[in-house]
Image (cartoon, rainbow, N blue to C red; front, top):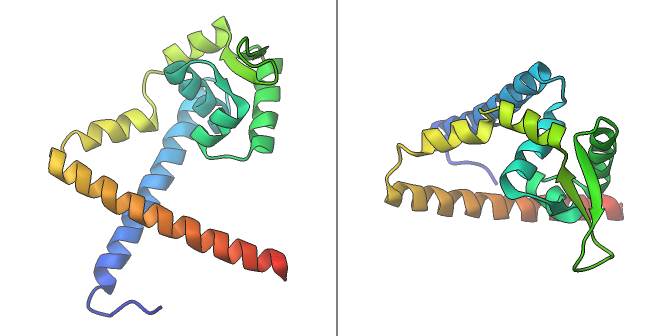
Length: 159
């Protein structure tokens, strides 16, 4: 579907803002991770576990928006480096939970600033109405992107 020429500048500006936010988030994460001798994904895992506590692999994968197989590799490396441990859930023995070690928790505490905190701080300038409107719009865009990706990936897989 072609974008009407009268709104193309606004669409382009929105896309530039989205790309900037995404790129800046990756850049900040990469720099902070480098300082702690971690990878960006490892830092993300540390901060998620610090904030939420023990998580199953599936829950962690969902939180960081990555495939279970990808997160398994990240956790394997982090476990070898003594940053996390896997423990069997006491409620459901089939579930393995990922938990920060003392070393992992210390490193997570030492890295006080992360992209999410910077973005939270930036969002504080919005009014409650602007916040609700932004959430509604971003959710609508995310759902549409998900449906397009599912459709296109599904079609490509059938070819």
